[in-house]
Length: 296
Ligand code: G3H
Ligand code: ZN
Image (cartoon, rainbow, N blue to C red; front, side, top):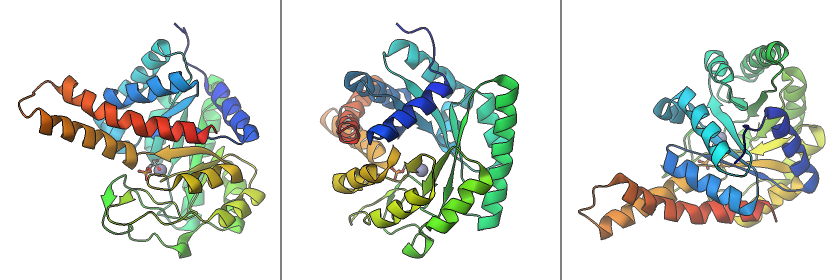
């Protein structure tokens, strides 16, 4: 049994090691402990570090402090490094809340704002994080996003409003944004979309655009909205330099499908841990396939 939760310095080292090795670290969101356990089990089995993400909505459901306690406990129980990320955080106040709760990283998401408003919100959060680091001697990674890719990990009939090739991140803006904000990690829009289309394949990633951005920006790049993208696209993105990949909708769907199948077969079952296990069974397949792909 390990005695300590891995520190954020280790997190940054691991990210850089993965970057050098041309591999990506998996980031999966959770809504409950059933999902968290599947992620940790597979990470331990494959001996790969993993990032557990909780969005504002997921944090509201689980509890901001409780999510930290859960991941601390998981770090005791599983022999693998598990980091906690405050995913898509939309205000300065909520960034302060998660940093003070001891999260390892946070994403300030101003992607819906104008460019200058986004820069200014992100810079304010980065300044706060740096002051917090100086005071506590604890590293907290801060990430920001540029170019709109939607906001919800849901099944959609059409692409979210505002998502279009016209809103892809450009290398010029990426460079300016990273320099002016001082963030640790950058999430671009390269054809990736939050959520999944119900009746159509996901749009293809623009790997050429990604390569241009990578040539202009010297910090780790994160791919959001990766549910539904083909293995080939994800592999090409990793080969181009993506170092963290976010998946939520695909594991939510697998979990939902597994529970549904269990309930269909056992309509009189009332024990949540039994239908939860049905959800875990389906979700396990997706988590393993993604983690194996990222480390190839
Ligand atoms: O931050 C969360 C991810 O970007 C999730 O995106 O629901 O499309 O997998 P996804
Ligand atoms: Zn995201």
